[in-house]
Image (cartoon, rainbow, N blue to C red; front, side, top):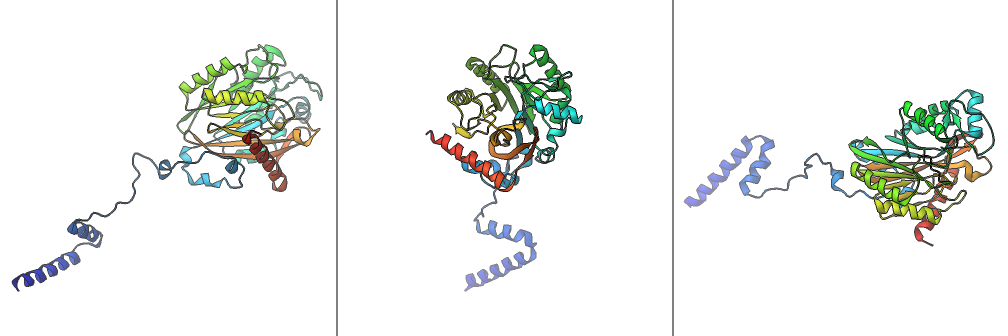
Length: 371
């Protein structure tokens, strides 16, 4: 009986104590009292966010050509780097004539600059396929190219950072023309690539290396040629000083929807040497993407600023937006465009846009199948 009375008194005392303590401490008190620790909420340690603990997907053919790329907005913007890559840029021949006649070096970009700048790319990588000269003769024909040096203002308008010059037309006015072009690029604050190895840019704490090689009409003019020994040397050197290596080739057979065997060989070889992304040009048609050893190859973006109005294919191109989360490529999106008036591109929408996206997807599936 005495034990029962003591037990009742003990319970009453416990209830009085629980009533007396603040509500915020009650759960702690009870948990401690019954010696059964409750599960703690997941904590993020060492500055890592939840997304750092999740394996983010590598782009696939399906995700690249899907209609939804908004999911990356859920990730930390402080760790995302967006790299925009263009097709062939030729402010020469009829494009140059139009620029000079209008006294307006921004004319080729007027219909696209607003949207391009709205993408807020961290790095924009263009392929400049002509020398830029103070004294460039205006012409509407021929295959010896040059553009007025004022055309550098158009590249500035779209926020170009890296300018690939390793191609078969940069040397059209010899070593002197190359030197003048380099001067205009550097004075503008841009960085030329395709001359004696990689250039480096840091974004969001990640070091990116850019390389460019010419595989068309190889000439000994100081520009980096697509020689296997040189490719391996430059990629391995860039790998030592960077986190991500991006390679641009000027290669392939013109006016073909699929890459040739040389393109595929060089692309695979580059990745085998350590390249993380291959983004290239020259065929003047859009070519497909390929995923090789979990690395992306874009064989040709088509034309961007050009005067080849004689077919729909040569009037079309895409801009590629390659999004990295820290060191990893996690999303790729393409923006189709069409060129009007011998040199002024406009972005496409609706059925025309989807036609090009679906064609790219179909050609990419065909290439990936190995048939």
